[in-house]
Image (tube, rainbow, N blue to C red; front, top):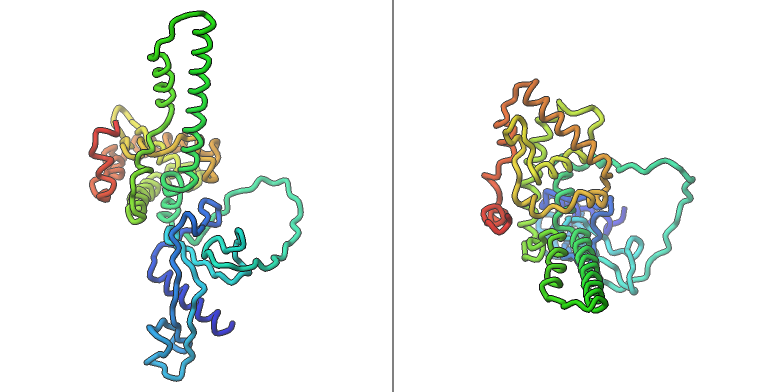
Length: 337
């Protein structure tokens, strides 16, 4: 390892130390780009003998040490991933690095031949994430990711196109039958199409990155606490990812046991979560989600009826009493009804 590589490693280590959460993007749920992400350019002097960052080209503590100036590290502020713009690992678009925006020429990448396999691909379990961090990744992908925004735009355009075609058929039918056309009929067609769309006002509001992280962290803590209470009653084959996804969609409508809400309905999730069929976009199949929902309902009843856990104790896990300020706006306004 040469001096520059050592300096890069020290800067990366210091960056991760200052940022406690780093989201793994190996699953493809987020692609860093200078056009859509806020990219931070790290420029640091590094003392190699002391293995620390210094403010200038000389280290006061190690006068004889070599100091290198690291200039090719770029960080995506949203997920905390560090990219080294060294041309060998850059993704080139129009002659520029997709992340840093610098002009470069992509190095030829060697490819390995992989034997064909007919086995189904499984989502690889990433052991570097804690349970709370994994829940944060799932929440961010479902609520705030670029994929979610693109899917909502595509769905809105398709619904609008269907409504436009229905209006054209209505007009042609009235002209063919020589029947008077009322504008209210056209308005009703567009109004019924609008009701098929979910509310996405929270996506158009300028919520800072810190606010998005606070929302994800708040719900992630709830999901982890519920998982720890329910895991002893869940079947052995229940996975963490599918179970917390089932918990999210259970919080969307609420789950009652003996007439009492064991999992209360969360107004923000009822307002913001996409339809359940969108779960396949985050590497969870709809079949596994359905099985996790059934296992969750059985585990809830087992926990309350056989293990004598009060319903109120389970419901208290889903309390929003300590929710972040950015979330209180959505929980306290009647416009979400």
